[in-house]
Structure formats: structure tokens, C-alpha cells
Amino acid sequence: MTMADEKAYLRTILKTARRAMAAERAATLSREVQNRLLESGLFDACPAIVLYAAVENEVATEALMERASKSGKSVMLVRCAPGGLEIARVRDFSSLVPGAFGIPEPPPGAEVVPPEALGRCLVVTPGVAFSAKGERIGRGGGHYDRLLAKLDSQAITVGLAYSFQLLDSVPQSGHDRRLNFVITESAVYQSSGAPRPVGSIWNQGGTTR
Image (tube, rainbow, N blue to C red):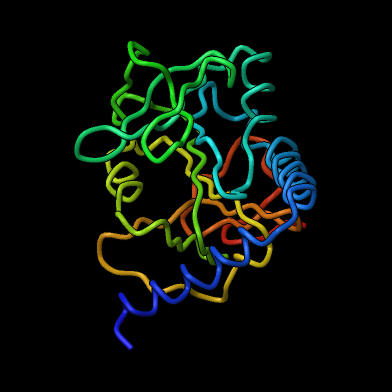
């Protein structure tokens, strides 16, 4: 089996499992994942946050956007653009409009922010499979990997996942970008070499539950 085949197999298995979750179960676990991020120290460490709009039972991000807006953070959302993804400022979820593939996104005219200009920012990403080492498999287009590659070195990248999406390891190619942290409803995982927020309770390469 080639790496591409292995990734495709994992996407099929894990996306099927995620889609099969009852809506109530997905909502409950999403709240737990978001609360774990809010309590982790990562959220408070950054003046700005980049989020995604969840689809197909992905871990939701509405609570993060609400808290970020109320706390005065700069809030941005990823959206589809010609050639990949771009980041645009938003006020709240009510301002989003249907975009490519039905994914909610910032409306036309929203200010676009180059990823390299974000500075100290928390970048929250979706995914299909993750490992505690920060490895990630996305939907298959490589769009997030290209976006993450452009980020300022001060940015902190975080993947949100359900525990069943966390594997011992996931196949990675040269262009795949490793995340600094992966958060599930059960634990926070910090990859080796990840930046350590002020007041963080983690040791380098450690895990907190």
C-alpha cells in the first residue's frame, strides 16, 4: 500500500466514523474539546485567533469564536480562494455566508489577512486524523499544509479532534506540516519543539489531561 493509499484509507474510515456520530454526541464532545482549549493557556497567550467553520461533524468552533469576540481578540476565519485558502476577518458566526462546498465563510469584502502577517496568533485547524506528535491528515487537497507553511514563526498551530481521530502515528510526506498542539476531549498533546505559552503547564513534548 502506498502512502497515498494509506491516507485515503484512513480518510474513508475516520470520516465515516465522524459522520456516523449522533448530532448530540458531536455537540457534547465539541464543547469539551473547546473548553479544554480555553482552559489550556493557549487561548489566553495569543491576541488573535484563526478558526474554521465545522462541517460533517467536525469539532465545532462557535464557543471559541464567541469567547474570542467577547475578550477583544482579533478573530479570523479560513475560507476557500482561487488556488487554496485565505484568512479573512469576521465578527461572529452570524456574519458568515455559504461558500465552496457549502462551508460557511466570511462574506465577500471581508478584510483578507496574509498568513505571514499574523504574528503571535492561535491558528486552529480541522483534520481527519492526528497523532500526539502533531501529525495531521486533512481532506486531501493539501490546502491547509500550504497555508500553515506561510505562517510567522510566532504562530501557534492547534488541531481539534475527537479521541477516536488520534492515532499512534499517521503517514506524512515532505509537504505535510506538523502542528504544535492537538487537543481532544480527553487531553492536550504538545509536539516536540512547539512554542510554550507563558503560564503553560506543559513540559516540552508533554501531555496534560
